Amino acid sequence: MIDLRSDTITRPTPAMKEAMMHAEVGDDVFQADPTVNALQQKLAGIFGMEDALLCPSGTMTNQIALRIQTQPQDEVICDKRSHIYLYEGGGMMYNSMVSPKLLDGDRGRITAEDIEAAVNPDDVHFPVSRLVSLENTMNKGGGSIYKLEEIRKIRSTCDRHGLRLHLDGARLYNALAETGESPVEYGQLFDTISVCFSKGLGAPVGSVLLGSSENIKKARRVRKVMGGGMRQAGYLAAACLYALDHHVDRLKEDHRRARAIGDMAAASPHVKSVYPVETNIVIVELNDGISEQWMLEKLKEKGVLAVGFGKGLVRFVTHLDFNDTHLDQLAHVLQTI
Ligand SMILES: *Cc1c(COP(=O)(O)O)cnc(C)c1O
Image (cartoon, rainbow, N blue to C red; front, top):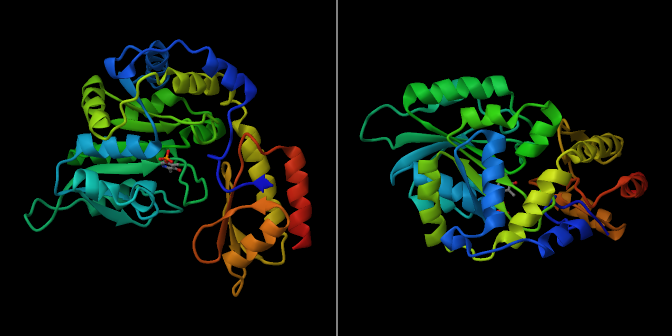
């Protein structure tokens, strides 16, 4: 099977497993796991932020970021396609008792202007606008990339209104690989950043929350109460460290293959359009009257897995375990449907 359902399906490479096997470990709840500490320090350094915290998932890092920077009754401003709203089980309402103000950005990217217009006046009828959350790259927008210039404007809008700014950077490394921008620029603009290692970077488990020492101290307390305080987590951190050293530069290959898939899909008689392919996600819009279920079944019959992404939409995601041979096979499959 050629599995393009997600970049989370990759399995650790032999070399990554080797690095995991030889990790030096300790009890991370006592902050005594040297490999976890090394990962957290390394990532904080890369982003020029004060501290970092390893968590089991990106849902947890996002949820912690919201929890430590909001009060119940506050409002979180985000795009209506955001992972924090759509795919975290209503977590912001459950964990933090906050509501979302949903904006409709360009393929998921909201602007400073949108945010300016969404901030509530100081009036008891309205929730208190407290935090803005961006997603880069934007999953539901087809892996779209934010312009750093727009994020700078968003930061000043946030400063003017006393809003905190969080980045769901599950695929931030995909954006950086494409733009060549420096992680430090991101570190300067956001209060908190979540980075996933279990997506394109190919680690089996792990997301890191970045922030100020004060925020990460609070985050450690919330991680514990959510049940995310792990013990000899260094085995997992070793995979993340390995990914940082070996799987960052290769992300551009995933993007090249995703662009090729976009071109192939556009040539299919069943396809109306393809979202612009900016990174490793390809969203294909099928012709009217063709359901995503039909397309997914046809693909599956021919050995290709993808996912439905809303009415008439199919998503393919390229990753570490998808190579040029698979790409040729996929080209053949798409030609024969
Ligand atoms: C995958 C993902 C997350 C985190 O998901 P987990 O499965 O909980 O690690 C967060 N945001 C985005 C945009 C994602 O794609």
